[in-house]
Length: 319
Image (cartoon, rainbow, N blue to C red):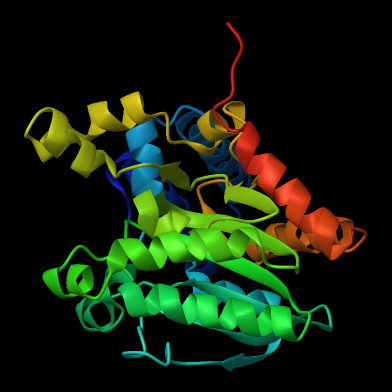
């Protein structure tokens, strides 16, 4: 039985898992053979899970991407890499705790890994600013990317944010400029850049570290120009209409892939990455390692030309 919290649409699964757990405990304590009954319930649970998770609405996918037990950037760094050395500060203003990064090894290969980091409770969320980076966070990320290019290290990026921080101080320190600067500089870096949206990917907050040679999405992540709540507040002046906004935004991984804005979808364990972090991390690692292997065959000039061509193709259509 997976520990909670449970989302509303997961409640029927919770009830059945609890029934199976209670029956297993009763069988053990009373030394009664109940294998047949337990197996029958497990088969029923599997069908229930298949039915629920194969028919999720876009809003339910958003909720799954926000699950408090879902693995974050530092979780994936721990599961995927070794010898991680975190680097701090933008050398201009401060060290933004919502943006983390540093050198690490992926299958023995030295890389630079960067990503947004959320907290799991009130205290850690305040410390991490709920994963919403300030300008100094984007400038720190760019400093690390330039360092990676200097030492010829591939860059692996994890995106998980509801947006860049919209506070007055962030605007005063040049939030928009810092994101725009990153986009320009990332387009010209002479090392491979592999990006994965691991949870939420919203607005310029995601795009500020989101320009690369390969862009992937975890199966239950979302990627959009704005959050459903923000969209609903603008269109209907009612954030409660977020489910309708999520449908209109077409923000699921399958939606974004159809628009040719990403290079692939990374499968998750049934029920979401939080149900088996090791499997989710293994799938993510396999994809990233394969992508880096393909990009290694390209010269720096080829990398840049293909990267630019990739983004120029977006939005092009014939009538």
